Image (cartoon, helix red, strand yellow):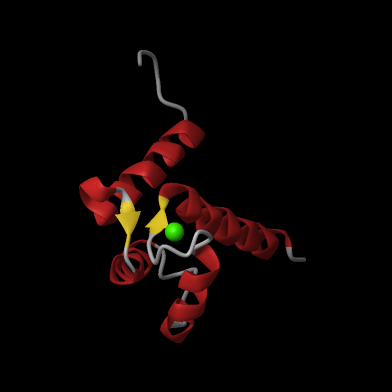
Length: 90
Ligand SMILES: [Ca+2]
């Protein structure tokens, strides 16, 4: 890839790299890994740890007890959308 990286594109790459940082080569997150990711990378947005079980169950659409990348970006979409609502509250 040549030329400059745009902000939105680099944000997308950050999402992928962050996922890989916690998933490792299996490209899936176990509950403990999801918890670590949330605590280390997005704790300003999600505070309550007691809702982790509920969140994990919601995200794990195919019920294999792991969060794959497709399931993970649903979380990113959800949090980004909630964040957008905060920014646009008057
Ligand atoms: Ca899953």
